[in-house]
Length: 509
Image 1: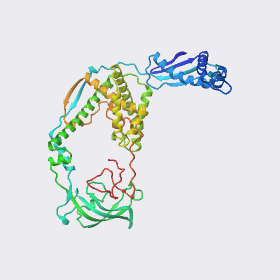
Image 2: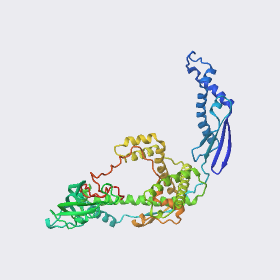
Image 3: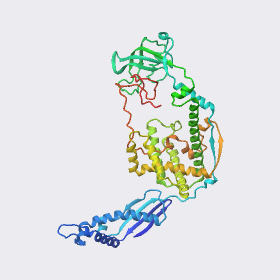
Image 4: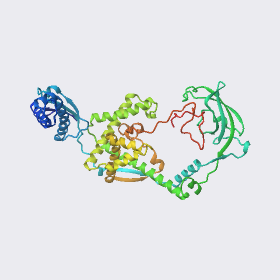
């Protein structure tokens, strides 16, 4: 075997591997002798088939199998012998005709093309100085949360005043209704005992507003127009009339912040509820502090390194990001800052983000490698189980998916590894805590150099598309006019029933 480095430019390498024809024929002869005792052919005693006959019958196939084994073995040996850490999967380009190689007429030659990992010295974590914002949980914060819980848990009861009481915003009006278009009732447009929360916005425009001032036993005629983008196409844009009879009127009852509130929420008393809220907020604050100090660490590491990046690695990262951006563009979901930019400007900006990601990934990987940081099997198993728990009823299929898909496991491994390396860096770095308010802790940071630091802020592109297991949750069924053509999925009120006059569920929250 002869190995020649044909090209070395930047991080790109090309090697030519040549196996002499005589060497291959000797290997072929040895292989035939090895399998000869097992060969069974008609007209020959077991194990007595002549070598020449085996070669004639199976030589090309045996040679093909040998080459299929030699190529990956030789590729790995070449990388090892040359101390190469590949940054991309090596590309193999076979230069020889397999039939001529099998007959011994020519040498077997192939090329290995790949990109190598850049050689650089990572910054010393001990020299980093970062500030970690921390916020205490204020009593006011807990009081506000208690007030919100009390408001959310308030029950509804018949409004005072009996039949003289009038419906107001915030009340629930219980109605029977029948909808018609051009005097004809339409499917899904009628219901009894439907509960409408005035001001909730769950029904099509104009429906709830026309119930303000309604009394029990009152009949009303509501005139509305279905939105042009209404999900039931046969109703979209049409005017409709709903004959309504009010059968009940309810208002929210006062709810005190006391032990009873805590018990309704499954806790022993008010002190227990306050303690639970405090712990929840402490966890939120700790997570946000961690995120911000990690961002500062990454920003400093990004600014401290400037080395050539593997082009294919950058391109793959950019393609992942651009796939998300393209989807956002198609669905009019771009961030406000991006909406007025040209596609070329966006590509330039997000390519810079891809370069930052690759750079930081290589830096963190090198720090982790140099300090023998790794992800244990126990940590991976825990991550797989946590992922499986997201798909209730399909946990077994999710675990099987990861068991059979190493690439999917690698997707789980990457963030665990990153967090462990960041933990290691923070242990060595000088970290100064700075007390801030909760508002400041959760405020978005301004980026001093957006083109270079944009990856820390861009929400649309900053999250990689995670591999989703085949065992996904069943998709929600489309709403039909016969069932609930106008209900908005997120608009739930206590004990409110489905009603056909509600908005389309497709509206984004």
